[in-house]
Image 1 (cartoon, each protein chain N blue to C red):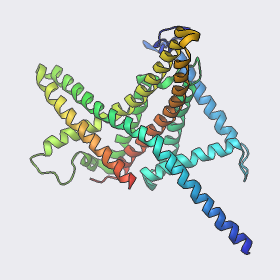
Image 2 (image 1 turned 135 degrees about the horizontal axis):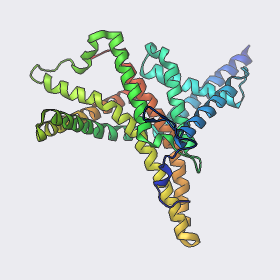
Image 3 (image 1 turned 90 degrees about the vertical axis):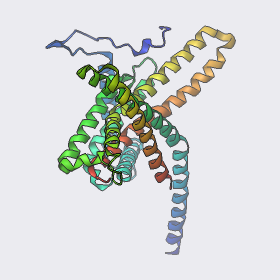
Image 4 (image 1 turned 120 degrees about the vertical axis):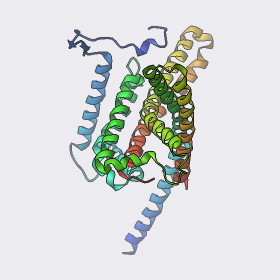
Length: 95
Length: 244
């Protein structure tokens, strides 16, 4: 009985050590690189989408530079907003 | 071997040209490598689930690890409600992963280095998640465009920003995967070209870079599949659990 208990506690310790090792390795290399890519594209995509919507609206209404300028600005705001949102999410995950 | 680093991304037809209603449906090298990925996934998972032992063999261990990995990812990011969507996310992850990894083999074609492929994935996810949101929450789903605690004067501006931010999801999702794969493979090819042109004298330096980059590319291939799947989970979470 005591032998089995001993083995179980030793197993637990070994397992917890393994888990710590795994989680550290994962967060250090992979997640950081992934997050960096995520932030970059998030910023650019919103600007692109805003500008494209502006371009389409301009072609519809024949108001050439108005909507593309306006929606480019809104797109940039949305891009920055996206980056802030993802950064906040990353911080929550860290804690 | 072509020296043009972009030559590897050419899509060409294999076999006869098939045209239905003016839409080109010919079998291309892209379709071939999608098929290769799908077949290798099937073989891998069939081997993994063939004989279920208590002490798993190599393939069974790998497929069980993969299952646990995705299952944990879904429950961490999207909660219990997302469990029914496990098959979708699992197939998505494993297909993107295998396409990326098959693309790492020499002389192969990387399916995910074309934006039309990744955009098709991303639009499918985007439209699916939007429909899902409307089915579950009805018109209340539009609330995600109206964050709480915003003054009324600012509301129209915030709403436009939120809508653009929502529409930019498929773009950022697809561009990230496509750009990473294309940039990585172009870089590998360029460094490979340096090795040939510098020859025995100084070709060793780009060769070491090439080896290091191959390692990095394998990491990126896995990572991009992971990011693709995890963002799908996050979008799914937004649609399932409405909180703003």
